[in-house]
Length: 287
Image 1: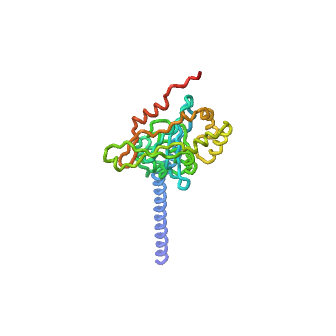
Image 2: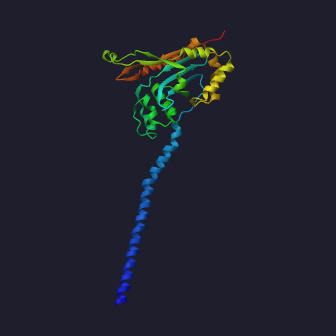
Image 3: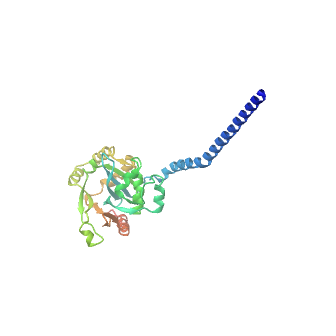
């Protein structure tokens, strides 16, 4: 009886162990299946987003009428605090600097917003330009800023140039203008709107260049201190046209818009016409 009882105990123990083993095996298999069908697609989705991201980064172009988006950024924080659009009509030798206030607020189109959500889900569809730096890292902020500005301005931007504030302030000064407002009540509390101009010192500095070689050397030197998606060699495609542009053909403008609820709102219809005027002037015929 003792042997029989001991034998039954061993058999029972082995059966229990076998059953536990089966359940463990089933559990492990089930876990692997669940992870395969649930977790794997998420990983694949993340990898897909990572692979798609370069499609959203802008490409440069060398254009007869170039559109250079200029950022001024704080040397310490990297925050974008000024934005200009430089439109250069190479054939007509006309150069425009259009100030786009960083207080500008607008609502991104659904198509662009859907592209930017995978990059940073926290980005709002209604955005102020001053907030761009918060939502993208320093390596991609200017590229994504170009996409946002193209969405706002409805034009294709040729390339961007990001200038540290310490250098920018040796080139530009700010003229504060009283803006158009949506009603008389706002006129009492509305802040001024900036328009960027070359400083007198910078104009004098530019006039000091007596040879093309000296100006070329200056561009090479300053290019090492700025950031751009246009290489120096590509930039030099515009060099001759820049040299032949008289100071009387350099203009400083403010993008058309109004102040509203402490934000600047671009008038898209007027701005579209504004850009069309800058880019469709009759070509100057040589004698």
